[in-house]
Image 1: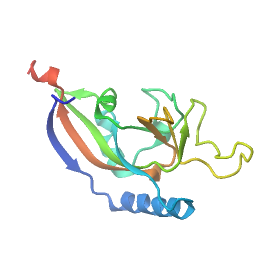
Image 2 (image 1 turned 90 degrees about the horizontal axis):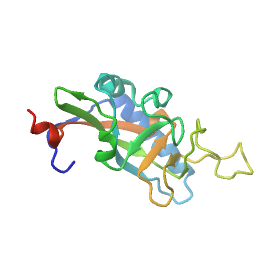
Image 3 (image 1 turned 60 degrees about the vertical axis):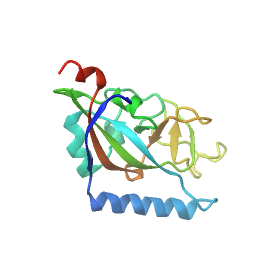
Image 4 (image 1 turned 30 degrees about the vertical axis):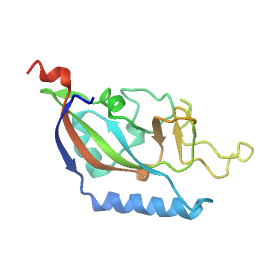
Length: 169
């Protein structure tokens, strides 16, 4: 993606969703034993028809997986790299769009397809405290799955043209 052309970066302004993210963050911070909660900027590819609804209503994990599956659980998927998320962005007249989202990662564990929420931190206490998210690889995560709508905020929309599409314009 290093040779792709970024056409625009638009900042999403939704104070209601931002407030819900902040509230979720402060709640997670109060529960944290380390006094810190991991927040990252991650990419999310989607079809253009869903951009506006995500900006207004946020990422909805209940609708996730219809195109891409649920390999690490039934949540909203985010990636460390734009290259990965590009695979889930559709093309409209050469243009593609994806989100750069602020995501509260918190404590994570390995995801599996059966999860509809993160598993408990203590397997002997199934009703106890849950992990905050799931990942593809606990040692070097590149894909993160969150199950709570308020754990992510669609902060930027990136519009770009793939390098190979530039040559055919």
